[in-house]
Amino acid sequence: MKKVHEEAGAALKKTQEKMKRYTDRSRKETEKWKKGDRVLLSTKDLVFKERPVRKLMERYIGPYAIEEIVSTNVVKLQLLSSMRIHPVVNVSQIVHYKEQVKEQKKEEGKPIEVEGVEEWEVEKILNKRKISGVEKYLV
Image 1 (tube, rainbow, N blue to C red):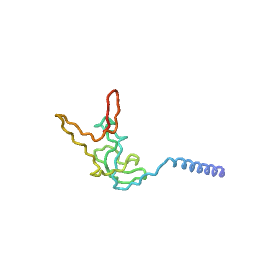
Image 2 (spheres, rainbow, N blue to C red):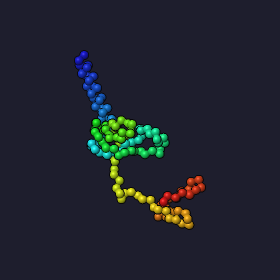
Image 3 (cartoon, one colour):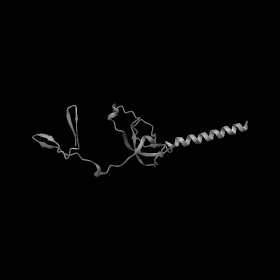
Image 4 (tube, one colour):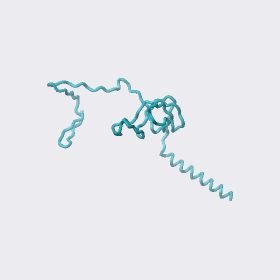
């Protein structure tokens, strides 16, 4: 009886290792998070009553600081008290926050007034297509 029990245990151990090897092939390394990192929180699973239309909502909100590293896959964020969600989230729901450089901001051109109508000066036409008889230009 003891021999059968040991053989079954060895077979289970071998099967576990095989399953782990196949599962780990599709997994990727998680990012290394530190306490104090600024991150953006995904709005994919959040519900906002003031914004009923999901497609017009931002994809990420924040930035929020990481308060504590609970495990390799879970972090605790410093959220606003007005947010009614649990502060502990999975790392798949956050991305690193990148500060925007001042020179990186793109300013829109100012319109020119021609015969009392505001118009914009086009530098270059990149593409043109016709949809339902109406020509549209990519500038």
